[in-house]
Picture 1: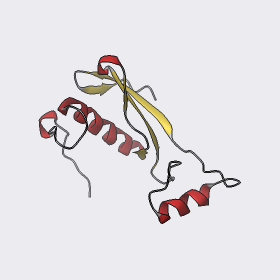
Picture 2: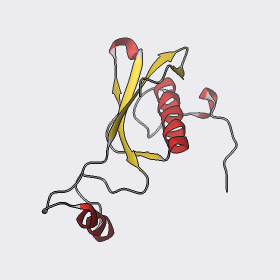
Picture 3: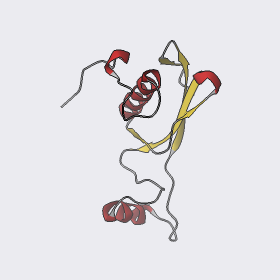
Length: 108
């Protein structure tokens, strides 16, 4: 099932998410862009001074995180891809400029 609803700033409430409605809106746009590319967020969001850019590490949806496993299934996935007992880190850095509460000029 595809969600065709366009993200709108006014739909985001500053309740249990960190940051203002504007930052929540930016984060939602990042999640949407990464999902289109087949990636999952794998770190905290990072921002430039005055929130002129946003960046985050993300990994392919079909690869495990290199972070501490959440459950036994995630640990098994990590072991499947490990080399000589070392977890593999599939995360990549993604970064965008922010103009008028919108992502522009993907730096990745």
